[in-house]
Length: 161
Image (cartoon, rainbow, N blue to C red; front, side, top):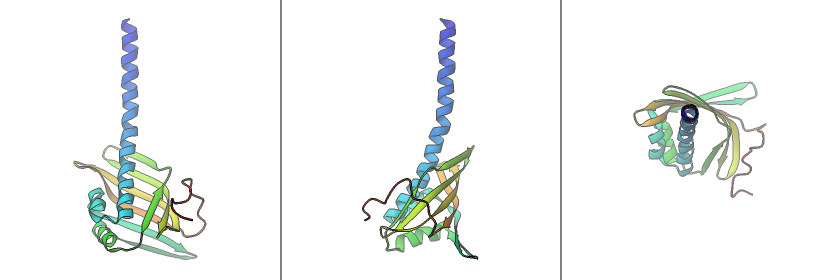
């Protein structure tokens, strides 16, 4: 009987330890999704709630042999978000998440739609830090690829022809 109890305790402990990283991964991905949701609703306050104020973002666009790299601070990102008029929808799939203590990285393919029309695809790379308020995006970089995009496993954007 004592052996049975010991085996059950070891099994429960191992299961709990395995579940913790998965829940942290889900929490990290949820922060990125909240940013996408804020973009879709053009909600500057919601975006700022998941972005570290000191952070920056960069985009990388290739056009033949030319490469354009642009970027700005998170504050500017949130201001542009609030002032924009067009509808935006960004969707990610199969995110890869790495976590070490209070830092995390999310690497994910995405597609982007403007006014319900496909615009481009690419790869997003987010760096996150776990603060006293929870996970926050410290910075991100993404590629902008208007051509040669694989079909999204998410299918067509709902409500598009």
